[in-house]
Length: 241
Ligand SMILES: Cc1cc2nc3c(=O)[nH]c(=O)nc-3n(C[C@H](O)[C@H](O)[C@H](O)COP(=O)(O)O)c2cc1C
Image (tube, rainbow, N blue to C red):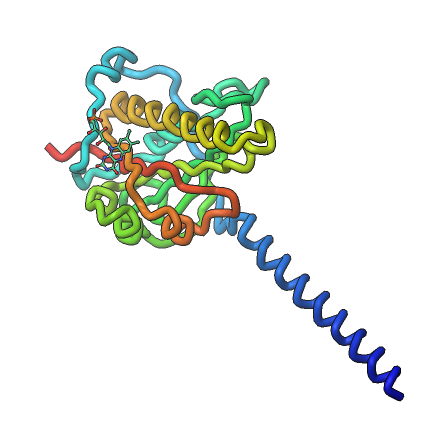
C-alpha cells in the first residue's frame, strides 16, 4: 500500500514539473517574438535629393525644438531606409556598414497622434527586407518615452522618435568575444545615427541623437524581445523657427 502511495506521489510530481516547465517555456517564447497588430507597406525610397553630402554634413546640427508640422509617410520611409534600408538586394546589404554582415540592429518608430500623414499613432518595427512597418502598439507613447529618456522634453514634442536597438547576442554568435561584440554593435549604431542626421538634413528635417535614458524602462516600454537593448533615440521633426 505504501509503495502504491509513493508511486502515485512520484507520478503527480513529474506531471507537475512538466506542466510548470511548459508554462515557463511558453511565457519565455512570448517575450522573444513581436506581437504584430498590422503591417504597413512603405513607399520606395528616393535615390536622389536636393542637398549634396557636403552640404548635409556642413549644415548638420542637433536641434531640440520642433514645430507642429506633420511628416509624410515618404519622409518616414526615407529616414528608415537611410538607417537600415536594403541597398543591395542581391547580396542583402544595407545602408549602414555591419561587421561581418551580421546586422544586429533593429529600428523602431514611435509615432505621435496626427504626426505622420497616412500613419496612425503607435509603436512600429521596421522590416528592411520588405520595406514595411509592423505595428506593435497602437497608442501615442511619446510622453512615456520622454519620462524614460530622463524627462527630455524634445522626445514628446517631436512628431516621431526613431529608436535603434542592438542584439548583442547575434554579434556574439559570430565573434564570441564579448567586449569586441559590444564595441562592434555600438559602432554600427553610430553609423546608422549619422545616416539619420544627414537624411533628415536632406529632407529639411532636424534631429538629435539621444543616449540618455533608463535602459530597463525602455525595454519594458517598447516590449523589446530578449537579447535586444536600446542604444539610441532620435526625435525627428521640422525645426521650430
Ligand atoms: C552618443 C551621444 C549621446 C548623446 N546624448 C544626448 C542626449 O541624451 N541628450 C541631448 O540633448 N543630446 C545628446 N547628444 C547630442 C550632443 O549633445 C550633440 O551632438 C553635441 O552637443 C554637439 O552638437 P551638434 O550635434 O549640433 O554638432 C548625444 C550625442 C551623442 C553622439
